[in-house]
Amino acid sequence: MMAELKAYRRKLGLRLAKADREGRFAQELRRICRSATRWYNAQIAAIEREDAARKRRARRATARSIERPPKPRRSVRTPGRHR
Amino acid sequence: MTKIPLRLYLETSFWRRLVDNQSPERRKASYRLYRFLLDRHEMLVSPLVFEELEHTTTAAELRPLLRKMKRGRVERLAQTAAVTQAAQSLLDEAGWGGGQGTDALHIAFAMMANVDVLVTWDAADIARKKTRDLVRRIARTWRIPFPELLTPVETLQWLHLSTR
Image 1 (cartoon, rainbow over the protein chains, first blue to last red):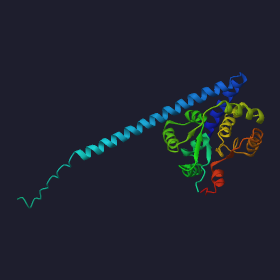
Image 2 (image 1 turned 135 degrees about the horizontal axis):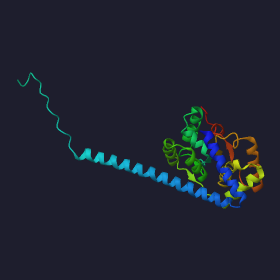
Image 3 (image 1 turned 120 degrees about the vertical axis):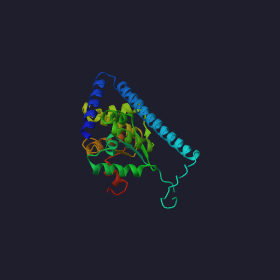
Image 4 (image 1 turned 90 degrees about the vertical axis):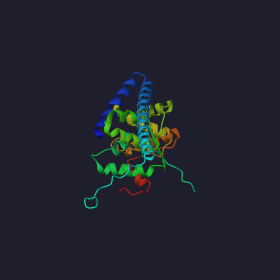
C-alpha cells in the first residue's frame, strides 16, 4: 500500500521537476491542486447526497409507520374452544 | 482555562493507514491519534493529499476514508505563491532529486500554515533527523515557526499519550 503511494509520489515529483526545468513549476502545481480540489469536492458532494437520500428514506419509513395503524392481530383458533 | 487547539498537518500516508488492513499496529496507532484529535485539535490537509489519495486508493477504501476526513472537519489548505516558493527553496537547499519534490511540497504546505506537527508514516524521507534539521535551519533563516516532523506513534508520545 505504501509502496503504491511512494511510487505515485515519485511520479508526481518527477512531473514537477520537469515542469521546474521548463520554468512552469508554479503553473503545474496550481493545475494539480485545482484538479485535486475539484475531485475532493465532487466526492464529498456525492457522500452528502448519499447521506441526504438515506435520511429521506428513514424519515419516510418513520412517517409510514406512524400514519398506518398496526394491523389487527389475527385471532388464532384453538381447536378445543370452537368445537 | 481554555486549551489552545494544536494544528496538525496530516500527510497522505496517515490517512491511507486508517484504511490499511496490512499493518494492524500502524492502523491502530493512526486511529488512536485520529480519535484523540477529533473535535479537540485542528486537522489540516493540502490539495496534494487529495491528489495522492485519488490515484492510490481503491474505491472501497475511499468512501470510509473521505467520511473520516469529513467527520474530522479537516481544514483544506490553499496552494499559494508562498507555498510554491517555499517548496522550491526546500528543494534547492536540500539538494533533493525530482522524486522528492512531493515531500518538499508537503513540508512547504505545513510550514506556511504554521502547523505544530506534520504527521507522516514516511520515516524514510520526511520524519527523519536529516529532514528535521533542514526544516529547522530553513525556518530559522525565514524567521517562521517550524513544524515537528513526526510519525503518528511519535506524535502520541509528543502528546504524552499511550501508544498502545
